[in-house]
Image 1 (cartoon, rainbow, N blue to C red):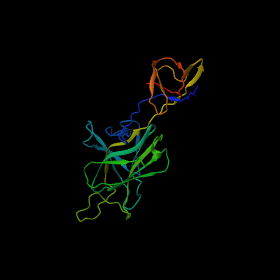
Image 2 (spheres, helix red, strand yellow):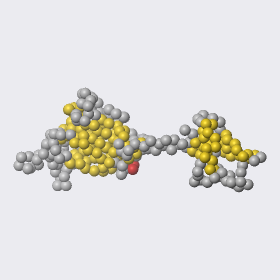
Image 3 (cartoon, rainbow, N blue to C red):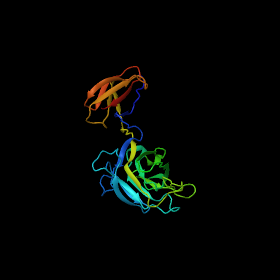
Image 4 (cartoon, rainbow, N blue to C red):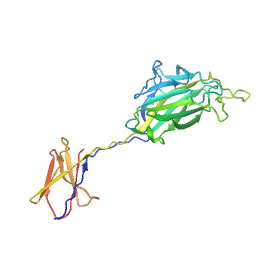
Length: 274
């Protein structure tokens, strides 16, 4: 009689994955002028570097009424405090991977044209996500940052993402719209306006724990048992090779055992449950 090989079975499940970085984990539409809490999902926004905020008309991409956006002013004086002033957004990334960051920004002509995005997981080190330059004033621009290269953000219990103004390589803030004579227009009184800010991600895969099979033999009969699985209907599958093909030998079972005669060929078994 050949040896019967025991396979550990696992509950099967259908895993639906979103497109990378496109599902909203938390979003801020700023339609409530009294709140910095996320309008979708759970999260908070806060002001950075001494800026102050007011509520202004939001992007036309938001059909809500009222339709608001957060406007920031009070940025650093020329040549000082680069990468300190702006907005920070926090949420939980538990159960999420391949994060992204999306927002719409509108700037006045004298605001800093250059912004930079950073992210951090669970209060850890700041991770540089890249910079963006605003090329037109007084219009909303859609911006998306891919954060998936920073693996530590995936699954973090708290993710923080912040947008801050940044000086040029020459150590100067540069205004979005130059003055008539072509000179730098930057002013700390310039404004940034943000709407539809979102932290995005893909749902992480969930793998069900394995269900061990037990095996006993008696008088030409082999009996499988799976005491770790109770309740749902089960199907027992059999094959003469690990590579299959697998055939259903008993389906719609509500019990916790399956018996069949022994044979001359090795047999492999697995149990699945919807």
